[in-house]
Image (tube, rainbow, N blue to C red):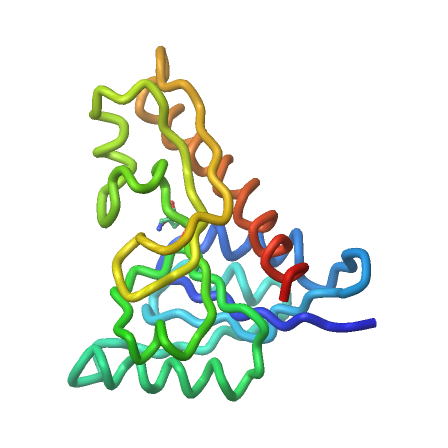
Length: 191
Ligand code: GRF
């Protein structure tokens, strides 16, 4: 059976990373199976590192503070991803702005905790919670050279009314856990 190879990049908690591993790693889907062949964190202290290890995946640490420029970091990142011959790279809470050195070379998707194009960038959950919008949600999109801007692959919304901040955050994360694996499958089926 055809094996589709994915890389997952993360920076912190890694709950999306773990969810992806649980739902996709070494699983069969119609005419292909999926392998997470690379998990990579730019943060040596990311909690996601331990999460990946539980599934016998040893993450690669690429500490961005050891690089002089953003471009130098991106060049190393691209090299590592290319060496793993991946079909798709998934940004799952990867808190780095990526330069064209990355975006031109690597086909990647990102999960963002808002209904894009609203609330691009940092603190999206807080801004979405405080806004007057009736609906909130999460989005998976292709990555391009602009932050949180590429073509939308999947998006799911909910009604904010009556939710306190904690329930609101939980709802966003549940949606992310639902749509990110679905989006990976959708893209891999077409590739
Ligand atoms: C997610 O909400 C994601 O949308 C945002 O950062 C968070 C990462 O959470 N970019 P985790 O590290 O996957 O737990």
